[in-house]
Length: 269
Image 1 (spheres, helix red, strand yellow):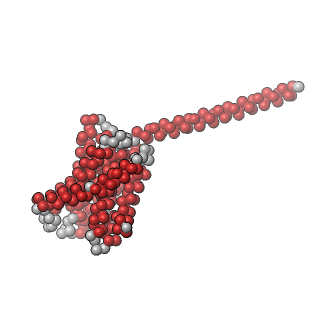
Image 2: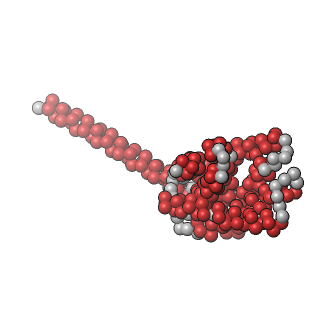
Image 3: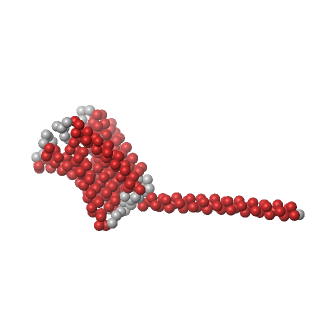
């Protein structure tokens, strides 16, 4: 139970953040859980494909720049992002409740966080120091998967609500960026044979990625069709309130005139 808590805590933090950001028309909770569970299950196919690719091309992570780059970009990044992309595109992109651009980010993030949770469990279970491993992954791998998902989901969501001839390009742009940034992050993180300073490039990327992810989330949120609806309802409520206040003011003025008339008649008598 303790291991599950250690792996789940950072994941829940990011999940709650993106859930609260989807404030205009929140997704059905059951489908968010389905996305998270699907992400957890994707760890199996991803590991199998990665092992097959490693055996097929004879790769091993070592002081060889070529094998390191291929391992980071193809074996790891391409495999993992393709698994998540396939489920996002085939299952969630087509659902009727995919009603605004930010939905692409929401479902991509839930898939990725499920994947990150399952991955963290594997690492923590195999670690000699579970606490150190959990802390390291909570500030590196989990935020990284969140960032990759935001890039993929932003363009997937944008594609759903744009011109038909632009959709395919945007969908693949999001996938390509997720793979590129995943590989870029891994290539410096896996480069244990290089000076330690180079590994800080991955950490700098995390900081930049988190900031830019928030920007993309806010941008997608502002493009929601429900923003205009909310403004229209707010304006309608304001108009009704103004009309009601005007009505009260009119009634007050009418009562005042009636009193003046009554006072005038009383004085005449």
